[in-house]
Image (cartoon, rainbow, N blue to C red):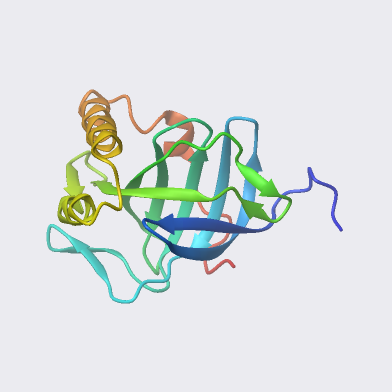
Length: 182
């Protein structure tokens, strides 16, 4: 077994969509601090994801995920198959207190349905409002948690429009390799 501080190393992202859809995504842990993880992984989707007429995620695309301790979001920096940067994908999530559950796996990340797509020129698109409404009706998410998800999304949009999000350290991060990982 490798020493805990040896990077990069394989890691699995554990991701839950309420009420109980648990998924695992393999990746390469590039950075581990007490405040965040940086994980590079190939994107796997059932069908291409489009926003404003452009494909933003497809099989073979690459994501560099930034998972933060005690934040209401994670952030993916997405690249197409030629490794051209296409934008940022921000999931609104329940904050996690511990980033890793063990050496090889993240703590369970719970998705709160709302997502934010940020184009390279800083335009914001709110995604999956319909999924949040559906989950409220099915009682998969509480009204209070849904309200918090909306407030966090609104706050992020204001930060993007004010030029304060994503932070410079994320903007500077580039893929490890030109082609696929994990």
